[in-house]
Image (tube, rainbow, N blue to C red; front, side):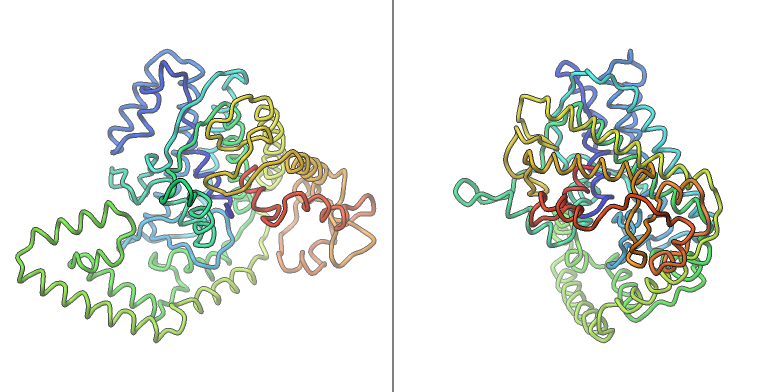
Length: 482
């Protein structure tokens, strides 16, 4: 797993926990096929006497709904995730919207503020779950679905498994498929099914803190110039002042218009088996003469589409590169909310605390039944991430948590490539905020207000710490472990 938002999506969607006696009722919201069915199941849980199992289910739904509502806002304004963005909040794959609403700076700030409020409520609900609650349930990630396009349906293309694969990218998808397939025993990948327990509740709560910290970083500053000059890379059709559709955008708009009229073209771009089957049935119901005409038109449209894409050189990647350069160049943000910037540090400290609770609970487990986050006593490669957890890995992770906490508390300084005799005080960066200039912070002048003499973390210590994570690297485990 190589992206934070993938971790949160899996976290918020997979923690529908309860005792076996209430499994069917409490799991109903997470197996629903429509929003109406899901809402009815949630209301039934709200009406019954509150138990730890029901409380966990409702808290999980609150976390899940925070991501769903954020995704719906992205879809409403025609969000498109660029191929080169590294921003955690802007990697969620949402369905295309041919008629997006206008996106403004104020609208985007409101969207982020609503996400933080939703996550804060989920964190509070999760914190109320008893530490000793005995809960666990089997969850199939293919059955857990969002309604990202607000159509009231929960179809296959909006499932957690599909979204995770889209975020993770082809390299991770290939490794996952290979890890799931044992040539000696089976010929097809395993279903992404796990059994979740109380420990994973801490994990979900920690991820909610991580995502809210990311959102608060935006809200703490006035990033209006960045929005005005580069956010067309995220909302290309939402009336952005700097938007300038290139040839690849025009080609995609043309083919999208034809897809709606030609099921053969729809088959070319269908992302799920469910969509392919629906289009095939639509074709079969047509007269033979019309089938032939539509098939011929589809072949011609695809030929022209491919020709136009080749004419752009790289399918529009140049525009994304230019917009990304504009984004980096304009991250010189005045302070807008000092409390929000201080809140980032508090979110991250809470994330560290919850990770320790999570591992304490994991290491106390005696079973080994399709664990989402296994301990060293539960060996074997994870079926989704392909990673393995050893005692050395867990010990190194706790060392990393100690280092991160010490940096957030200002007990240890971070090294800066420009200054060998001083270190960067991360606590003061959050608690004594000044305008944030990304480039100048990296090159040195922007870091000056937070430089101090004292104990500085060494690069050699970091290399020793991360060595335990092997060839997969520290960050692959960090996104999974939280």
